[in-house]
Length: 265
Ligand SMILES: [Zn+2]
Ligand SMILES: [Zn+2]
Image (cartoon, rainbow, N blue to C red):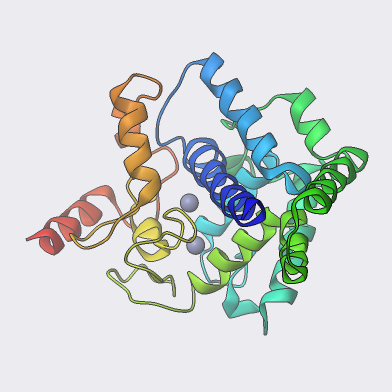
């Protein structure tokens, strides 16, 4: 029982901080927060991703490229360009490493504006620290496993971040339904995305890149946005800047707003 709770908690926390901090805040700047809260959530992201921590810079550059080149040959991780999810993720890791470790410089429009904390980012990408996290997961399992099948869950903890990336990048551009024609093949995989905290509303998100709510129709629920509404209400984050459109999706704001209105009617 302890192992199941640990697995579910690690899965949910890791994907929550990925979508809330790295994606919606770091890559898109959909909302604002004080430096103190930014540091707090940066640490939470490190603690929850552990051995598979992604730096906000590496993630942000990769992700802005994904939006700009969605499902074209220049998209860093489109299922259109790969025969299976493993080759796609290996290529994604390669591109991510180039930017995260400063081996390549991105186009200027993809750079800047993401949270940077050199100490934590360096520690998060340090292999000794990554192995220490992995060892901690193993020790936890040694203490709490009560049935042999539970060991099958262990490897997922080592690569929690990439697992979520694989699900979102592959399924979100391959399986599900479409609300909008974005000129790409993005899809909404689940109408209530309990699996990746809202990330699987890829079709909506590619249409409204700056909207903090990834759900667009009445029956769609984006769990992370519901948490963000509470954080906004108590003053931890400020979503009023969400309309600045600093890192927009395809199409103009007016086109996107008109289409949203017609769907809601
Ligand atoms: Zn996408
Ligand atoms: Zn995005």
